[in-house]
Length: 490
Image 1 (cartoon, rainbow, N blue to C red):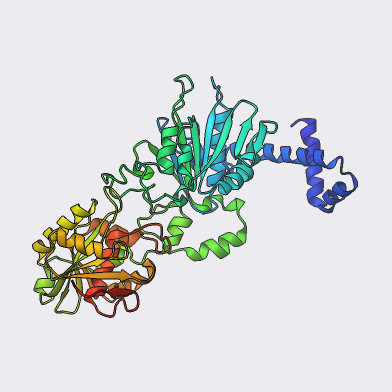
Image 2: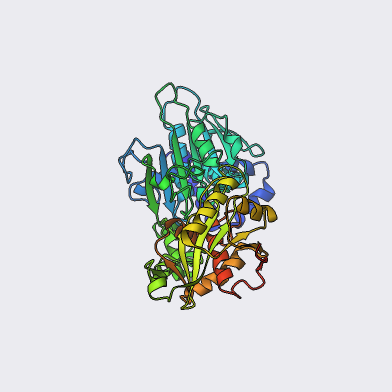
C-alpha cells in the first residue's frame, strides 16, 4: 500500500472512531471538506474493488463472476445472455455493475463501447443502477460526465452508457449497442410478453445489441432479477404467434446463475435476516424472494399446483359418478379486436347431478370475431351445450349479433362484469377449495393461468380463466352475486 493510501486509511479510521470530527471539519474548514470527501470516496471504491476480487471474499462469489472467466460458476463463453436469478439482497445489482465495469474497462476496444442500462423505470436506472451501483464501483477518475436528466454516463476511455425504461420500449428502436445490463426485468411493464413478441422492451433491446467492434466482439446481455412466473423468463407456449419463442430462462443462448439472500448475509443487517427472511421459510415467497428460484406459480395466485391436482378427475367422472349433466354451457371472454390480439377465452363447463361444476374443455383461440364466432358454433354442436354465456362489457349487443351470424343457435346470455377480476375470481376459488368445481381432464394453458395470474396485476388479461369464472358463476347461482349481471337469453 502506498504512503498516500496509508494516510487516507488512517484518516478514515480516525473519523470512524470520532464521527463528530467529520462535521467539525465541514463546519470549520469548508474549503478543505470537498477534498476530504473525494479522498474518502476514492479509498472506499478501491476497498470495494479489492474486496470483490479477493480470493474467498464475500464479494465476487463464483456465481457472481462472468461466465467463461477464471473462478466463475460456468466455463461457457459462447453465451448471449447471462441471467442472474437472485433473492432480495443477494448481490444482483452489484454483480450487474461489476460485470458492466469489467467489460467496459478491462478490454481493449477498437471503438468506443456503447452500453444500455434498462430498468423498470428511468428512476430505477438513475438511482439503483447508476448512482447506487456503478458510481460506487467505477475506478476513481474513470467517470468523465454523469448527466442525470438524460440518464447518460460517459467514461474517460470513451465508453458511453445510456439509460432506458420499460415504460418506453420504443426508445430502444434504432440505437446500436455492444452490450446491456437489464435490471429486475421480471418487474418490467411488459414482463408478461415473451422475448419474441413485437415492440417489447426486451425484443427491442435484443435488436439493438448488434455492435461487433470490427468483428472482434459478441454482444452481451447481463440480466439481473428476482425471478417471477412471467413470460419474459419462462414462456409456456413458445409457438404462440402473439408471444413466440422461449423465455430467457429456457433460451439455449442463456447461461444462468442462482444467488440466495443467505450467500450475501454478511453484507446485510442482522435484523433483516432474522426478522424478515427467516420467518418466510417453508413458504412460496421464500423460494422466490430469498432463494431466487423461478417458480411456476405467482405468489398471489388463487390456485396452486397442489390444489389443481386435488380437483382433477378423469373426463368420464361427471357422467359415470356425477350422475350426468343437468346443463352445459360454452362460456366466452371475447377478443373484440381484429387479427392477433388477445385470446378469446372459450371454456365448456357443465353442472352435474352431484351438484358440482365440471370444466369439460378449453377451446380458447386467437382470431378475429368472425373466426371465433364460427368456432363457437362448432363447439356448441360438438358438446351439445344448452346455452352460451358471453361477456358483453366490450361490444355489447354486437357480441351477441356476431355469435348469431356465426351460426350459434342456442340461447345466448350476455354477462356484464361489474367488479375487478380479483373480486370475480375469489368466489370460484372458494368453490374450488370446497371441491365443488372440478377439472375433467388436463388443461395445460388454463391451469397455468390459474397458477400464474397475479390478481393484483390488472394489466394482464387471463382470458381462459375469465371464461371459466363466468361459466362457474352462471352454473352455480349465487356464486357471483353482485359481481355480474346476466342478461336474459336472446
